Amino acid sequence: MTSTAGKFRRAVRDGGVPPVLAAAVLWGTVGPAEILAGSSASPVAIGACRMLVGGAVLGLFTARPAGIRTLWQRSARWWMLVSVLVTAAFQACFLEAVARSGAALATAVTFGAVPVVTGICGRALNGERLSGRWGCGTVCAIGGITLLLVPADGGPADRTGVLLGLVAGAGFGVYISATKRLGDRGADTAAAAPVSVLGAGILVSPWVLARPDGLGEPRAVVLVGWLALATTALGYLLFTRGVARISGATTGTLSLAEPLVATVLGIVLLGERLSPPGVAGAVLLLGGLVLVSVPSRRRPAVTRTEAARTEAARTEVVRAQETGAGTGGGGGDHASRAARTGAREEA
Image 1 (cartoon, rainbow, N blue to C red):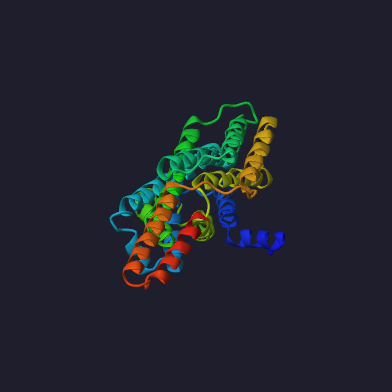
Image 2 (cartoon, rainbow, N blue to C red):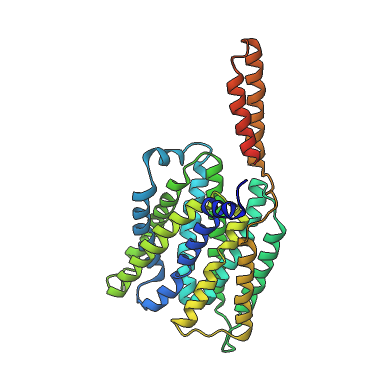
């Protein structure tokens, strides 16, 4: 019998939580890095350079011609286009929100919206069950974001910055769902990430031509290097490897590590202050993150996609058995393989 410790190690090694959580930590440094650099360049132009460079580097490690071809098959091409569009919206809106509202507040607002959007999309598109853990984690997120919106100095929050953060969060939530839909349709999600990022960079690139001021500064070059290589290339690589192994709702809630990291860095490196309600909000965010990260002992609910695969495997078993009966049992081995496939899908 496999030991409990062995089961735990295998779950960590094969699970999607660690890479998605690591990506969230890297992404949590985006806002503080932008403010710490203090570049005079346009945030949208910085974002465009980040996507162009990061997408190209990511593509060198993950994109293959065969994988890219799967992105444009009939069943996947529209979700690929959605992925490109929402990636562009996320990058442009988020960096502008950081410039207006500060790293901690903008990141908190943006990623507080993500689990709600991913949970709803997962339910509507894939039939994913919204678990009690997702509900509790999302309530913690909404409560934490609300408390973080309370300004430390008593002044009002920048409404435009908050709105841009919400749009960015909705865009990233849709991106998570689009990535899962691409995987369900046989597309190579490892190739989808660089195509999404690079395509979004091309869409936003006219901003670089319109607002090139400050992009040649050393601090701007260093900022683009960090954002492109660490938070884009490495971050999306980790995210792509983990997102296919967990539900969209869990993925969205794990992304709450980003506002937590941004808040800590904002306080330690940037001198941003949290009010007592803001401290309580950060604690709530951490609680929601822990709640959805702890492995559940219950068997996960079967989604419509998984049910369809299982039914297809069972149909194959019946056909193979009928063929075997008609040919003297020659299809027995094939039926056994199909049955084992169906059992693995149900497991």
